[in-house]
Image (cartoon, one colour):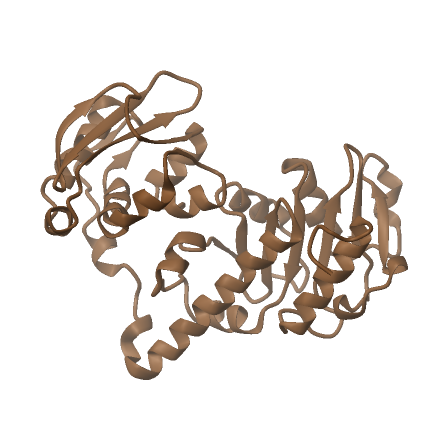
Length: 333
C-alpha cells in the first residue's frame, strides 16, 4: 500500500504504523499517530496498541469539541499533546515515536551536528525541548517549538513530527535518525567531532548593537558583515555568486533586495524585482534572526516561501548557508 492511497484514513494510519515499526522507529506499544478528519474530529491510535500491528478498532475517533472525550479510557496519555497540535495546526498528520538513535544522541548532545547537505536542508537546527515525566506533561513547549519546525525532539523521550501526510512526517524522522547515525559513525574517525557545536559562531556574536527587526539599519548591518566575510568572498568568486535575491516580510511593505556580484553585495535595493524572493511572516523571520530556524529547512518545510527555482539557488548553497549564519550575528530588539 502507498501512503495516501489507502481505502480510508484508517488504512493510512495502519500502514504508517507498520512502516515505523519495520524501521524500528517504534517498538512494542510505544508511539502514537493522529490525523484531523474535519473541523471537529480527529482519529488517534488508542492507548496500549502496537503501531506495527494496528487494526481498525485500535484507531478511535475523537470529537475535540466534547470535553467528556478526555475521560475516554482508551485515549493515549499523549492525547493532550495531539489535541493541542490539532488546535494550533489544523489539517496536520501527527507522528509521535521514540527513535533509538535520536534518543541516545540527544541524551548526551545538546544540538544536532550537521555533517551532510541533506541534514542541513531538512532537519538542521531541530529544536530540543525538555520534559520531566515519562509522558509529555508540558505540551505547550512542544507547540512553541513546532511553530519553528515541523520536527521536534523531546529530550529523553522521543520526537514529534507534523506534515500534510504521514509520508512527509515519516521522512523527517528518518532523516533525523540518519543524521545522528552519521554523526555517531563520524566520531569513530574523529573523536572530537561532537565537541561543543558552533562554538566559534557563538563566541563571535556581535554584542555591540541591537536593531529593530527588518529595519533598514538591521539589514544594512547584515550587508556590512557579508561584505567582510572571507568565506562568502572566496566562494562567491569561485561559484560566480552573481544574482538578485529579495527578502520580504509578509503583511507589510518591508522588502530588501541584495544585488550580489561575485559574492559581494554591491547594492541594497527596496523592491521585489528579483528572480529569487524569500518571504515569511514576522514570527518566522524573528526565529531565523534569533538562530532558532535555518531558512533552508524553513523553506523545505513550507514555513518560508521561495519564489524562484530552488535547484538553481542551491548551486550557491555554501555561501548562502554562511549568509544565514550571519543573519544570526546581528542582534535584534
